[in-house]
Image (tube, rainbow, N blue to C red; front, side):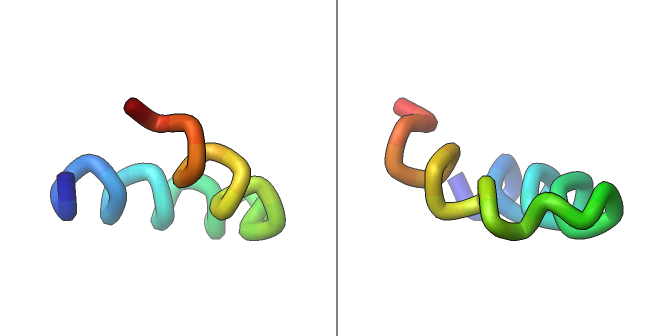
Length: 29
């Protein structure tokens, strides 16, 4: 899970959509 989260987190931050991070985190599984 940490691996997947890290990849998503970096990708989202790169796009500047950190605000969506929590939204996806609550609905990943």
